[in-house]
Length: 172
Image 1 (cartoon, rainbow, N blue to C red):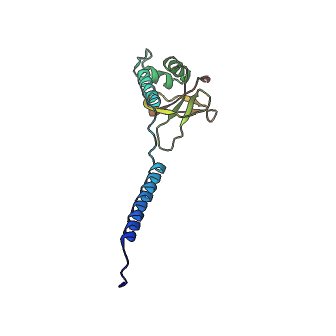
Image 2: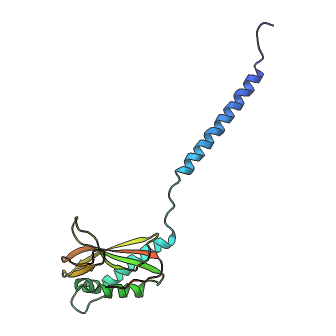
Image 3: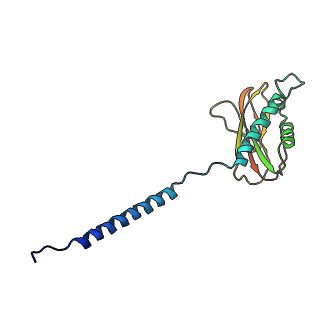
């Protein structure tokens, strides 16, 4: 023999190694894809809550006021009658929907004011923002600080945080 070895077994081993390397590579890519799966989109029910919150606030803002204010929402907030706002929200929203009502006063350094809390634990929640123009600057009770805060007239952000849980809170 002239020192020539048969190469048939070597070629078979290389094919097996290439197939094994390909399978390992596919398994690694699958593992990485599973780890970095995108977050699931919000469920349809929470999207509906967001729309319901926004449309409810828009409805309150379009109800006419008989006291000369631009809307019923403006009247109730400008005169500090948060309880009437929450009464209307309670009539509009399902009893299994809890909510917190916040007012973000105009200004970048202003802290949000908690105007109403339904109580309970906030789970997965939906947020509805609504721009609110207040004709007068009332003193509103901030539940989070336990004190009345003077609010200047003008444009503010009314935030309605909604989640599914029966309501238990009382307006102040």
